[in-house]
Every structure is written in C-alpha cells, then in structure tokens.
Image (tube, rainbow, N blue to C red; front, side, top):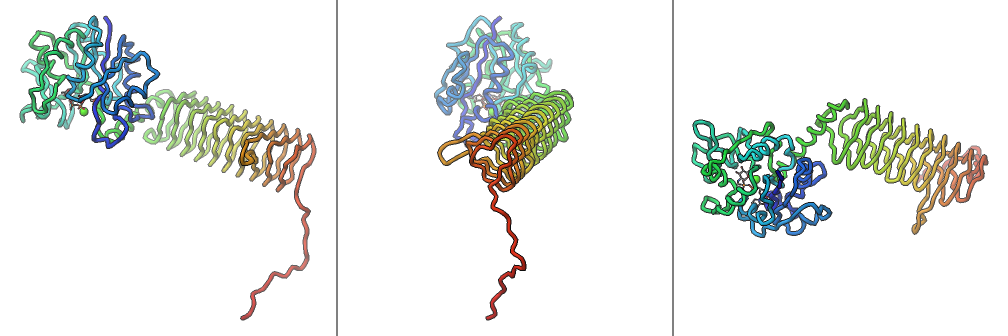
Length: 456
Ligand code: UD1
Ligand code: CA
C-alpha cells in the first residue's frame, strides 16, 4: 500500500514578525520544514506534496535541490481543509495519505506509526495529545463509549467542549481515496469561515469508518510553532533530546542543558564535553576527546585524545591524535594539526599545516603556512602572508626554532634545523641549520640621566 504525505506549509506565521516564511525558521540550524522532510524520509513515503503559500517561492527555492518533492501553491489561506484540497489533484489514490504540518518539526516516525497502522487497516488515525492548557486547539469529542465523534475547533466549542483536555495535533492518516472524497464535501460554515480539515472526522463516523485517536506520548513533540517563544522552547527541547542521546552513547556532558548541536556530532568513546559547547555542521570527536567550557567547533574532525581548552573557536580544521588547543585559540579554515601538535593561547591559524609535535604556544598568527615536525614557534610570531594584494606562502621545515616576536615575510622558506633570533623580520629564505637574525646590535650607555621636570 503506497504512502503519500501532504505537508501543510502555507500559513503566514504572522506572530513570528518575520520576513522569512515560518517553516524556514531553524531548529538546530535546520529549517522546520527540513526536519519534517527528514521524518518523511524515514517513513519511506512514495510521494511527498508540500502545500506552500506565504512567502511565495522562497519555500520551494530553499529546497530546490529536492526533485522528489511535489509543490503546490495555496494562494489564499482559507483553512487546513482548503490547503489539503490543493494537493488533491496530485495525490495518489491507491494507498494511504498522511497529513503533516510544516511547523511541527520534532514529530518522530515512531509517534506516527500508530496512526499509519490505523490507516492501513482502513481506519482514520488521528494523533492527539493531553494538554493541561488545551486553549486554542481543536478538541476531541468522544461519546460515552469513548468513541471519537468529531473534532470541534476552539472558536466553535461550547463551554463543556472547551473543558476537554484531549486536543487535535492536526496530524492524521487515512485512505487517500476517502480523503479526496471528503475534502470535496467540506464547507466553511463555521465561526472562522474556514474550510476545516477536521470536519472529515464527522464524515468518517457517518460513513462507519473507524476513527482511532492515538495520544502522543510526549506533548513537546507535537508542539506547533507560532511565535519565537515557542521556537525557543522547541529549540531547547530539541537540544535536550540530542544531549540525552549523547549521554546514552557514553559521552560525559557536564551539563546537558548547556550544549548546542546545530548539525551532526559524531563521537567516540569516553568523550567529555564541558559547558557551553556549540557544535555546528559536521563535527567528529575521536575517543577520549575532552572539550573545556565555551568552545565553538564547526565542520571539523578532532582526533582521539585531543584536549581543547576553554574559549577556543575551531572551524574547518582537522586535528590528528593528542593535539592540544587553547585556551583562547582560533583555528580558521584549512588548519590541519598533526599528532601531538600544540596551539596555545591567543594563537590564530588559517590554512596552516602544523607538523607532529610542533608548538605554537603564545600570541601568534600562522597563515598560509606549512610547518614541519618538532618545530618551536616563539611567542608573538607573525607570518606576514598578505602584501595588500596577494597571499603568499611560508614554509618552515622540521626542527626549526623561531625566536619570539619574529615576522616572517612571505613568500619565505626556513630550512631544516634553522634558528631565527628573537625580534627578527625575515624576508629572505634561511638555509638549513643557519642562524638568521635581523636584530640591531644591543648597546648600553652607562650612567644614563633621565630628563627631569623643568622648574617654573
Ligand atoms: C489546526 C486544527 C486544530 C488543531 C491545530 C493544531 C483545523 C481546522 N484545526 O488549527 O484542530 O488543534 O491545528 O495546531 O484543522 N495551513 C495552511 N493553509 C491554511 C491554513 C493552515 O497551509 O489555509 C497550515 C499552517 O501553515 C500550519 C497548519 O496548516 O502548518 C495548521 O494551521 P494553523 O492555522 O496553525 O492551525 P489551526 O487551523 O488554528
Ligand atoms: Ca497552529
């Protein structure tokens, strides 16, 4: 039996006060709509139709690469029933249809399975939730035998109906053929003058189609997002869910409420992450990695046994085993650190290859540079890689010692085992094993009298 999914994503999201269509707002750096599409993917749907409207082509354009999606525009938002009606001409009739909302991002496939199972048995499956504050939602009206009779919208509900705490999440599944038939019979004769998708429940009951209401186990999962407060709440819930997964994978989190994963984080064994870590894009942490507080790591691979000290920022970098970074280090794109390399405080690297066991411990900028193994780069060393027009490369071969406060004016090559005297400006190549220095000779003037203040 085929599965067709219809995602309703035409709503304006007025209360977001945003130029961005609501469903493109991110949770964990991924749009709400993308979250829903990922869930659809895991359901192995045969067809996925997205009903878009507000924000025009912005929504399909954001997902232009997805050739497996079908798009249909709802030019006027006349209600959820009207939105589904736009998808009817495209809908396959031979299987079941699942209606999802583009602004309910965290719904899991496991939660959808019961309503899908109901639909496969010929019933109408609707996902409901028990809420302490059901205000604003459609309520599930049941008879004395607990059979679902209909859904009444908040604005149409009697005081007795408003007291019902079981609400409609809006998510439902049923025979696609029946859906199409009933959508054609909807009217807008109600308090809001809208075409209510929910009216099909009554039609199902009238047609003797069983209605199965499945209560979602977690009411945060079915939370729709209408304003930025709900966006923030769902974001934190999502982050806690990811943190819980990491804990169960054996990661130590000093505080599961103070980690943000905006992308994918892969971890080895015995990883320890202290507070306020932000991971963006694709990040891999090898076995035994330890991350101290306040680090941001983006699109990087951190090898086994690495230690990232507090307040370090790492982007598009690759760290081999047992590398040490920070505190207060900034590794910019193209940084590659070989085993046991060490980058200390207030060091910035960019497009830099640092060889095994080499150290840049304090206050340096190393850019467009290849550094060999066992090199020591003294405090305050700067590679002058930019002449105002072009970038040039610096090569520092194995076992070089660069004295403190050195400027290396690229392009320049420092041969194996060479030594650079502190305070030098090196603008030509240094041969292997040589000592290079550009320091003016020191002189001492004895018994120096400092100027004294004039008497007035
Ligand atoms: C709907 C349900 C209500 C349920 C609630 C859950 C109906 C009539 N009511 O309420 O029972 O408790 O969801 O949040 O179905 N949309 C469109 N086009 C439209 C209208 C809506 O695409 O013309 C989309 C919205 O973008 C949103 C979803 O449908 O993703 C729900 O719309 P919303 O206005 O938030 O829900 P209500 O109709 O108030
Ligand atoms: Ca809503």
